Image (cartoon, rainbow, N blue to C red):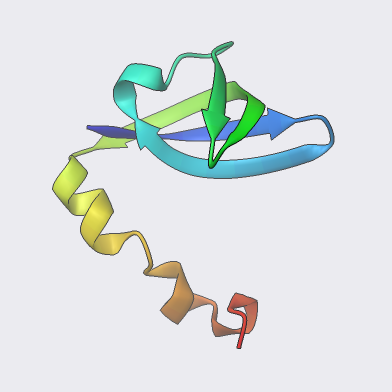
Length: 68
């Protein structure tokens, strides 16, 4: 299972689907080689296969956000 979380680090804020075992409010994570991401909010969970197949769907929904 993957859980959607709000992650914060200093002045940065991000939303991410992370493995559910790490999705605990107050947990500090290392993401993409960068330490210090705080799980500040935890939302819903979905199965791995659903998330991994759809992880890039936002690219077609918001084409203006994609680097060209």
